[in-house]
Amino acid sequence: MTTTLTIVQAGPALTIQDRGRAGWLAQGLTKSGAADLVAVHEGAALLGQSPDLAVIEMTGTGGTFTADADIRIALTGASMTATIDGETIVGNASHLLPPGAKLTIGGATSGTYGYLHIGGGIATESVLGARASHLSAGLGTALKSGDRLPVAPDKGRATGMQLPRDTRFDGGTVRVVASMQTDRFTADERDRFTSTQFARDPRANRMGVRMDHDGAGFYAEGGLTILSEVIVPGDIQITGDGAPFVLMGESQTTGGYPRIGTVIPRDLPRVAQAPAGTKITFEFVTLDQAIQLETQHRRDIKELPGQITALVRDPASINNLLSYQLVGGVISATDNPFEKDT
Image (tube, rainbow, N blue to C red):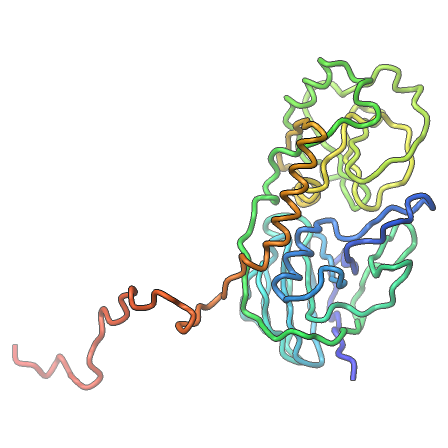
């Protein structure tokens, strides 16, 4: 019998995502996939399963979910309030969801995209090699209340595990490499770009994120003569009003706006997760530096399982247990202090 996850009440923007579908750019289809791939790997590590399995991406807020059998879950990405039958559970951790129990995931308190991982993964039909929804291309649909999602068999058992939370939800510095039209921006214009503090504009979605800033817009020399050509997620287009626009997983595949640079893949989740108004600055790095950063990032991803700790420590696993003060403040179960002579 197939286990089923039911969406009792859906938030405004829930979709099924995975690591996306590669190899279709020449046919006019970008990769799509989860906006925060680090969160996908974190959930996979917490549940001890493949990062290729499909998850539920929640934008801004989650919803209410039930299952018809015991399932393991993990919550990663944006910090969202969450309870199981009214009992608070923590994020960046794995938990057991019993059959019939209500998992309620509320609004984000930090970050933008939250992820609900299921032991075994969501087993919807694969299309063009992936289960990821790509709404702007007509692949998949937004999840809605009443949807029933099949869950694949879970090969794991462990729950009650957690991972440390990093700083990608707080904005900060985003590294970029030179793009196709970087040299069309003067040195002064590039210096102004890197010295400007931007704020993540509320006008953002899975196609792109607009960056707001004080002062004049940015302009490329001969920008009106640029022909449409291939673009990829991470490219920073300078739109007609001079504002930078960071392209995300569901961006178009060609465009004619000049690109001042391209965000390196490891920093794209920092852009995606920044809530509206969060401060971001850009820093140019060389291609060699970008390769080194990406290589280290892949090492860090592989090392995630080694960072997992138990939410509640088992005394049998504490190798320095005898160093703890375990009997301080002990009282007698039979001695009544009020019967003593004064």
